[in-house]
Length: 184
Image 1 (cartoon, one colour):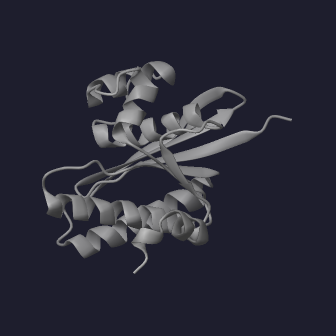
Image 2 (cartoon, rainbow, N blue to C red):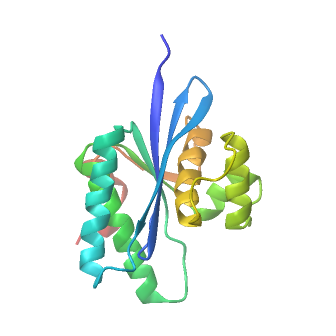
C-alpha cells in the first residue's frame, strides 16, 4: 500500500501571497497545484486578511493537506510592513489550525538552503531549482511569490522527520504552550 502525503506550502504576503501544493508518494515528489492570491486590489488590510483566511480554507478543503508549512516572517526595518506580514501569516496559521492541520514554520534562509544549497539564493534561482526538482517543463506562474509557496512545501518534505530550525504546532494548545510570550 502506497501512502501519500499532501503538503501545502504558504509564502505569506500582503500584496501577493503564494501557495504551493505537493504530493509525496514514498520519496517521489510531484507538484499538485500552485496559486497566488493577488491582494493589492483590495481596499484595506482587514479585507486582505479575510481573503487570505478564505483562500487558505478553500485550498485546505479542496486538497486536504496532511501538513501545512509556512515561511516565517524575516526581520526588516519597516515595522509597519512586519506587522502586516505577521498578521497575514497569523491568518493563514489560524485557517490551518481551524481545520486541525499541523503547521511548521521555516525561515527564508532555511527554505533557500533546502532547495538550492545556498541560503542567499535569489527567488529566480529557487524557482529554477524547483522546476528541475519537480520535472516541470516550464514554471506555471509568473509570480515568484507562488513559487516561494511551492518552495516552502518542498523544504518541508526535505526536512520531514528531522530536527531543524523550525516550529511545529498541532493545534491551538500546542501553539500556546510553545509560545507563552504571545499570550496576553
